[in-house]
Image (cartoon, rainbow, N blue to C red; front, top):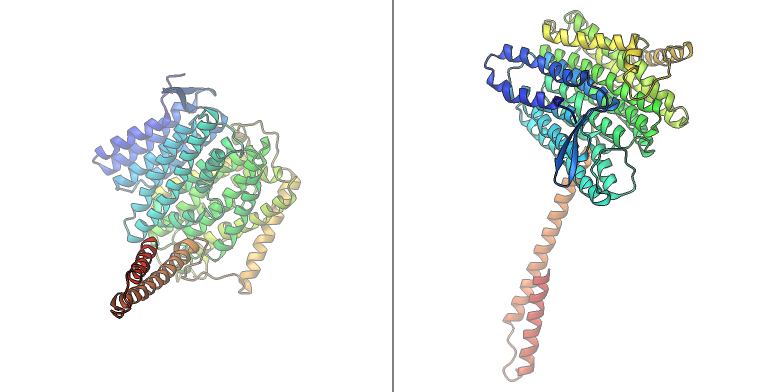
Length: 557
């Protein structure tokens, strides 16, 4: 037990006080100090520090500091600072408060040492984050927010069911490594999987992130899915199912990202792809693989935020994030272009950039699984194509010349500063990887910059670039069109509702037809009057029995 102030409380206190500050610029400046102050509460604390809260006949560990929680809390603090700096022009109190509660809940969940505390903060991230979508205040964002919160609440409900069953089975709510040997752990596993955007459970991500405000998308990209990765690493490290789930996650988004016209949706598919690498690392479960997962999550939060910020800056100046409507902006927005290219090279794992030194750990750990390793190689090429090339190419070069492109101003200064800070971190981590390796959960005995590794990676990247150039040269690369690409969610958003509606219409029609015929028959029977000379008590009893039987059948149906 310690007197250390919980970092999440700093965010929650700021969320209560922020609306009371009337001056918008002063409020934006003061909000930048919140992540710094919150990080200071745990930055110099020693591993093993904890808070215990007695509750009935159990004890909740509401704060636990160790190597795994420290790294995620640190990168979440960086992400919160970058998001607030990037959104310094925002005057919407709702969005600012939502960002603070969202970030505070994510950091609180990372430090949770028991499943009950995890659930409270888990739901906090769900409720706070949906307002980053609704803050756009459009009819489409409202509907998208409803779908988003439905998926998040479903995750929370499954987590709650799993916790109750887990406590019933074990008498404990400790958040430690689990095995998939009971209904309880399967419920918890699927709850984590929804938030991590497992295949067939992923559509909420591509649906919601592009629908948020341009600053809200940056914030959304940092917390929810990486919190799920943390939860999987804490609770299900070494679960073999995750290896193959992750391998599928790295591959299927590549196709959709290649044909997608909305650039924020492209980055959402790319995010799904990158999560697959992390899930593979958790599934392998070795110290090298888990270090790779944590390092990749750390690097990914930064360079993915940078890419979303660059697309957001273009959207802010041009009013569109559609690839078919952009191009030729390199002369109008040169700083944004350079910073975007840094993010693109980082996500593509070019040497001297953060993605290279992080992703390499997972790829090396996957070598005993030949087909998984091969899938990661293919996925790496796909990442370069849709995020490393398509994003900067579509916005700053594309099929327009600088003369044909709209004349716009460079991104606002605070956006440039936020992007520059993120780009600097991408380069610093890539050039000096030992600084990141030093804070990973396990000792790292790995050298990323060997001749064989660098040459192999450069060959992979340059041949992918050559393939892209040839496809573009001969007109074989899929062009972006103003269209809606069908995904798995079409089944439950369009196909199943229409199927149920048609079945309901047919059942209703059949029921009405049956009821009409039955009524007609009953009317004819009731109107039938047998001859007086043939009537008898037995005949009348028979007709009454028949009518009663018909009534009972109708009542039963």
